[in-house]
Structures are given as structure tokens and as C-alpha cells.
Length: 248
Image 1 (cartoon, rainbow, N blue to C red):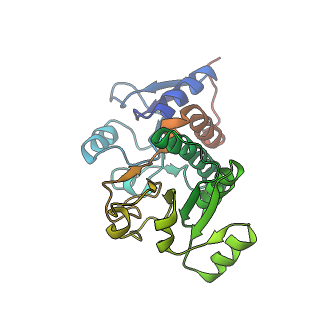
Image 2: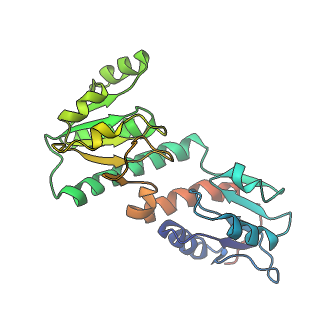
């Protein structure tokens, strides 16, 4: 079984190493017509342009099993079997935790400060938002959460955090967005006296209207925790591989 991985992301370099270590024949390379590709692994994030995707799918057969984090996009180029390995709840939970943990490193790198006793405002209370609150509060941060739905605000209170509005940005040391649509106007991020650090974790278009003062945290697990991220991808896709002989 011949496996091709197409990504320059550090987590996929480690994934390639893990596959080879465990007896699979894996390559970090675009498939070619002269060597059959049985399994194609594409990145979680849409880092490949249409020209590259076209080249890839011109070189594989219709029976190649494709793993991707963007099934809809891949099906524009390929009619064979595509498995979106980013959709399972187990994967989503673990990836959310890694994202939240990696965000700690980003804050430290930006500020050179401890998070203890700092006021952190999380925008959104989904998987990532919840892990952000747990991890940051365990390190002594004072956690506040912006959410619009009343039932979510009640959940935030039950979990021991404080719901706040966007105006609380003016009192925050750190603002982390997890909502994939614009909710923070430029009047907040452009304030001259603003002391807050802004970190974007949501997918495009993100939550900040003005992105000039915002750290783009897209793909953080792959940048800061690539080995753990590779292990997560490996554990997710291996049970979905065809039952074939491995090379020992």
C-alpha cells in the first residue's frame, strides 16, 4: 500500500515519520502517474491552491482513498472516495484541546508575561472556548466569556466563569476569538489606549474587523504542537485504512 502526503505543515512531516515507523510505505510528495497512490492524505486546512489540487488529482486513479479536512473542496476535483477526518467528535475535541493549549504559548511569546491574574475574554463558548477557559483558569487567569444566547450564558455561569459583553474588551488583558464571523468592530482593536492582546483562532473571516493588531492563530496545533497533532491524525485515520498487509 503506497501512501502520499501532500503538505508542508510540520504535523504532516511527523505523520509521515509515524506511518513509516509503523510499517507503512509513506511519502511526502505529490502523486505521479508512474507510481500508484493507494492512499492520499491532504491537510486539514485548505493550504493547497486549485492548480496544485488539479495536478494532484490528474495523477491518481479513481480507486485512491483520499483523506482530507475539506471534503467539499476536494469533491470539486475528485469523484472517488473522500473521508473528511476532521469531522468526528473525538477528533474535534482533541484538536480543540491542542488549540487551547497552544494558545498559552502564543500569549507567552507575545507578552513575555505570566497569565496569572490577567483578565482573559473568550469570544464564543464552543469546544475551543471551553478548553481555553479550563486551561487558562487553571493557570490563574480570570476568565470572562462573550456569548449571545441566554442558555449559553447560563452554561458559562454554571461552569464558573463570567459572561460579559464586547465592551469588556476595554478591561481585558487578552481577547481570544473562536467565532467564525465578524463580531469585533475596529473601534475596539484600534483604540490607542488598548492594552489587550488579540488572538484569532476562528476560520476565515474570523471575528475581528480590523486584523492589523490581531495575531493569526490559524493552525496553531500544527505550528506549536506538531508531534501531538500528528499523533491525533494518525490515531484518527489508521482505523479507516483498508485492511491490507503492512510492510514489516
